[in-house]
Length: 200
Image (tube, rainbow, N blue to C red):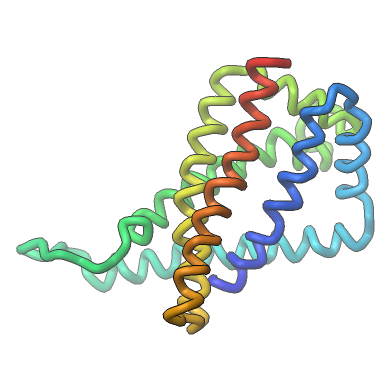
């Protein structure tokens, strides 16, 4: 699950870089980039790997959580202080929220490309701009990216811990990078949505 999660983390900066083209007044750069991502053979292979990593990450996440629930179906009679991070305790819920958002995202974009949902796959620029002008969609979008930030912060640092890469010097560095990543990436996506919603 950690390895699959780290692989997925590599995709988000690429996705953000392409989405920043939505801020341009000319739709052509974004549509060209989206077309390249949809049709270039190497990207298609990476897309398959991304879906495989996503499936593995989600499946293991639910498996581990269910296993934990079954290990203690009844809570302790007396609550005691736990060293477990609050981020860790809510990972299943932040992850589930992100999964629901991904399903929505697939309907709005990926399924259009597959021809399963009505829309113009050659003009995702207009599709995105039209969606970001809907207040409810923005509320959902922004809420999900706050939850994504919380998920990423714990996921980034805990993945390195899971792989046994704890170190008195490097662990604080990893946590700092995790904080920056979990703020900058969701913040970048949110900035795009808010800018289109309010100023375009």
